[in-house]
Length: 320
Ligand SMILES: [Fe+2]
Image (spheres, protein in one colour):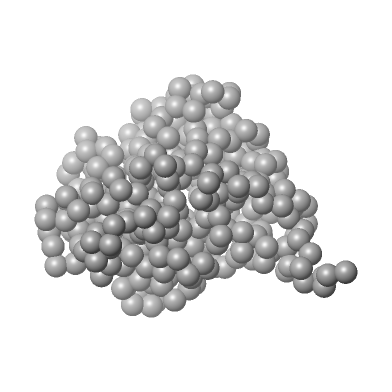
């Protein structure tokens, strides 16, 4: 008989040759038993992306489960900025649906919100533009459009992409620091909407491009479309290398596409180990409801605040 410490409560079925796993065996009793929670944490550190089918959590359970993983980010800054929210009493829930505050499908009448959604179709790690980045995102499908109408999330294995980098390229990029801006990503995605905005007029977060992933000890390429420039370089000078890095990490062999199959599915990932993007607008857009909600766990680890100084107080003014 083995010791109880070795008993596994969950099964992890890989979804890709190098990362991603489907998790079975969760009962979602709260609070989560400590050994089960540890298996989930170990699992997300190993696999980067975990898919839980039919978790069927409500907002309250979604928040309560996520809080066990660390301090949650919230949308209070956006409420203060006057943006109407569907869940003002649950600021830990990031509304990433295509619905407005009256629960109606978004139309072109809200171009900024549509522009924000477009920004999410570029490669990123959630909250890389904030001084304290986030560790985990937990994205829950509440109401899906009909199957086949789009809405998948694409991931990249940015740790394996680092492992595979030629030594000369590693030497070139190992010490670089990126300056990150939410507005830069929005301008890239929707220049017609954000044309008048100058990202340099706002504070930017600084994070190391290559950093160890604490949960696995593996190095990770933390490059996103929030990266505006490198330290000691202009945007124009930085652009070719940023594009080269994004091209390297987004090679098809590093990609995993996760489809939401059922209302109630939950996908969790570690933003310090993988990159992601929403797929280009599916055919559901403007026609079918797609209600997706996310909680976001701050990175309380030793690289969480990057090069910004622990406790630095500003936050980017737009959500995604
Ligand atoms: Fe995201």
